[in-house]
Image 1: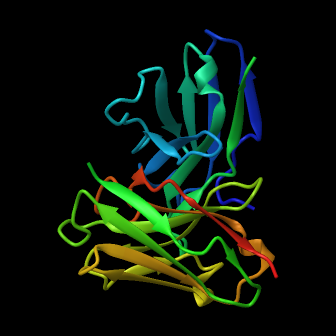
Image 2: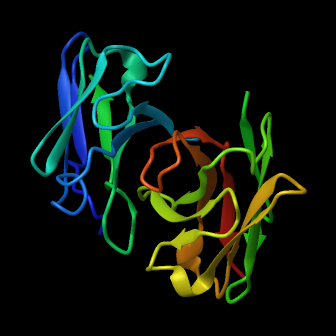
Length: 111
Length: 123
């Protein structure tokens, strides 16, 4: 069982917006702004798309945005495109004996 | 441009030890203060952080679920860091990635990843 909870799947049509949630505790997501999001296409390396809750690395589309409220972080993808179909993982620093934790992943299907 | 490349056996037997190496090119593993990390993904499952080692080679963190079986080391002269995982079972079958974080903290996001190497544990 993953430390952070994500929905197993989400879907949306091209052009629409979707939001993926990532729920943790005050010891991880809620306590620190070290929440990151990764896009993972099968057979490829994960790609960092959001760091520190809402920062986009250079080259990442501004269609990807991150936020946080309490113990839940969110990734929003606007203007869905076919190429966005992938698995998405959140991760957080945790002030526990496991300092790096991942969510279970969310499969995004673009209809 | 910094690049990471994992190397190691693709097939190992149960109860044996897995040894993987992550070779860093385009930069020095010891010139910057990073927690170089290992992450894995079992088939059909999510990402799991295995552990990280600081650029000095002196500080390491391991996932408690694996801690007694994991050793992470760093060789500055070869510009690589390594993962040893002992007492393998089928549950250790996974794609293993090495990665470098954005910043100097253990919680920083990983922005540079190797391509991953598939390891199968089977007799």
